[in-house]
Length: 340
Ligand code: KG4
Image (tube, rainbow, N blue to C red):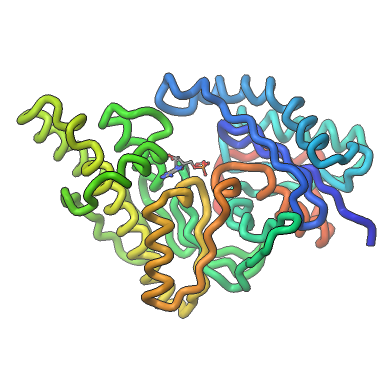
């Protein structure tokens, strides 16, 4: 069979990304991030759409050049159809449609969350690869989602539990914000926490039935603790930021792992994967290794480059769908909200 080359495009939030896949092997994965949002402490949708407009052509061009592939060699174009910010999605979706129409090649639509989970199947040239067998459980933790997903096949995924309020990444970002740290807060909390004591403070944990998560109570508990301490000592946060970050992070990790363990035990599945932006977190990665040792889990942790939003994860789903002749019509609109 001839090589299948797929160009993948991801523009659901604040990263403009393009990747070229040869089958399930990634040839290039180019991402332009948007620093413009830092000063606002969060993603500003209109600014994100404008930056995507500026970035999309150079990013796709760079991905093709790095892969050494001419656009005429492409077999199909895969793109993130949703969920995400509508204005951001529209840039990638419209670009994909225009390019596919001009080249006369099919399009494959990809669900962003499915992409995060399927990132475990991306192969790299010359690198050893180890992907999970089906079925497996995936903890999908990002700025917008916190879910436990039972993955039966690349297209059959069941949400076992999910957050009823904030996502884990959102909680990290808000914790950093109330401490007056920068944005995105997750990586800053991670860095500070490595120098701090995770047992220095105790914050309240949710009591939610089943496998669902909640992080809003923890956020409030953190805020009240901080207010009380700052009232007693003005520079308290500055003087204790490492311990505060480490204790907050440890509570988030405990909550995430507790439900994951419960789901693994009830479903009898010990193949456990981690996905999404928060999977870059050091303490969460360590917890995965600890649980693997203690409970005999076979764990799958993505490479850093495939944790945050990137187009290779869209390309891998695009490839599997291509093999199934699962193409998308020109009239399919972007969607902002969905479940898997
Ligand atoms: O998946 P992602 O790149 O974007 C979407 O949500 O779509 O995830 C971003 C989230 C942010 O909340 C960010 O603070 C968090 O992932 N994050 C981290 C770390 N790196 C990114 N959280 C904790 N520790 C990290 N090292």
